[in-house]
Length: 137
Image (cartoon, rainbow, N blue to C red; front, side):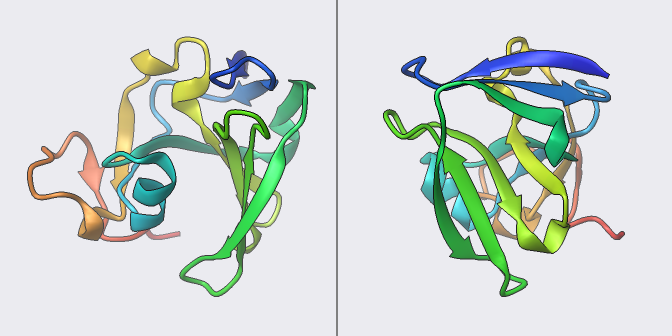
């Protein structure tokens, strides 16, 4: 595992995330919620164990909504600039979804899969294997 440092836009919140393979387990997420929360066509994420992330400076606030499963999705973000650090989906147990593009070197990570392709914008090219929702378990 490799440890990466992350920080929000304003620098008030910082964290470390341990990733097993930073270049090939990235999720390129097209879901409508990620579009609304991030203001873009997709978000770049990786699913990691909750204990693989540590807030090292500041804190996060939490916003909760209910996902397709009907269970809570807890969005943890910087209370000052609202940068989303990670999401915890109750349906995923002790796993969290960390925003990998916010990690040092994250802009160079390559996606290994695209999820929620059914919500992909028509002008976006396919950059990795695409699933309509999530890949099979």
